[in-house]
Length: 163
Image (tube, rainbow, N blue to C red; front, side):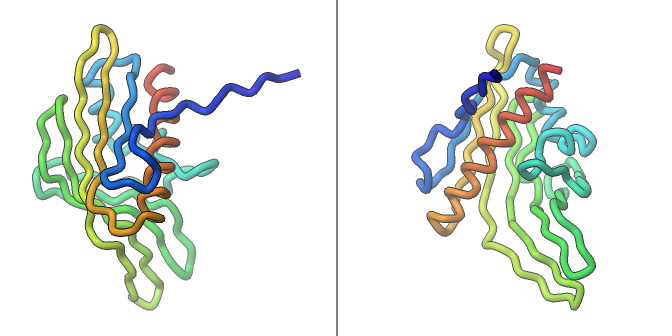
């Protein structure tokens, strides 16, 4: 008989509340975790939809630089997250804007209002405390979805950096 491990809980804010706060202690240096957030081949290993993978990850790591993580691409549409880097203080802090976008083959584009993500990386002995705040998400349902998404991503990040 297999014993199922309980899900790790990284979501610290109440579901649906603004801002969404996600925190975790990771067995890696701040430099290692910062790299996991800022290098496309690293992001592709942990920032993935449930039971899926990123189609592509593009990062132009400079203030004002753009990022785009494609989670689905078909002949009819592409679904992705995108934004711009606002603060880069390696390996301590990373702030970026965030939009969820559906881009259709006919050129139409549907995007959420822009929200903001702030991530801090604090050395804690041989580990790193990561605190992520995702704010200015308009609806409670969207905040619930984002909170669940970040919670799952942090679980995969913990597995990825401890491999």
